[in-house]
Length: 166
View 1: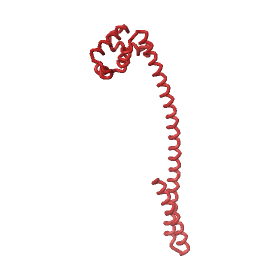
View 2 (view 1 turned 60 degrees about the vertical axis):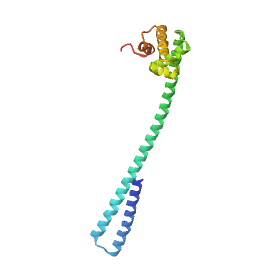
View 3 (view 1 turned 90 degrees about the vertical axis):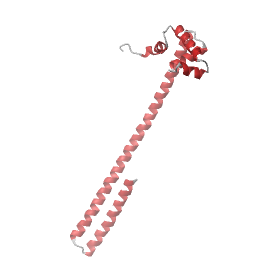
View 4 (view 1 turned 180 degrees about the horizontal axis):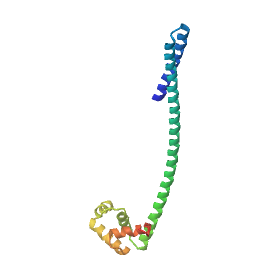
C-alpha cells in the first residue's frame, strides 16, 4: 500500500514538473534550469516505474506462495486422513490382540491407558479406582501377554514397526 502511494506521488511530481518544464521553455528560462527540472521528471518517472514493476513482481510472488500454501494444505489434509485411517487400523489390531490374550474389558481399558503412557496413579484417577487395583490389573495384563512389565508390554506393540537393521 505504501509503495502504491509513493509511486502515485512520484507520478504526480513527474507530471507537475513536466508541465513546469513546458512552461519554462515557453517563458525562455535558462537551459540549465530546464535541464535540471527535466532530470527531476526523468528520475521521478524511472523510480515510479521501478516501484510499479516491483509491486507487480511481489504480487505475483504472493499469488504463487498462496497457491503453494493451498496445495500444501490439501496434501496435509490427505496425510492427516491417512494418519487417522492408520490410527484406527492400529487401534483395531491392538484390540484384536487384547481379545487373543483374553483381557477383560477393565484390563483392556487399563492396557490402552498404559500404552498411552499414563502412570498407575493417573490411570486410577481416570478410571476412578484405587491405584492398587490398577497395579493388580496391570500385573494380570503382563501375565496374559507373557511380558515382564510396562516397557515390554509397550515394546510388544512397537517391535513390528522397527526395521531389522537397527
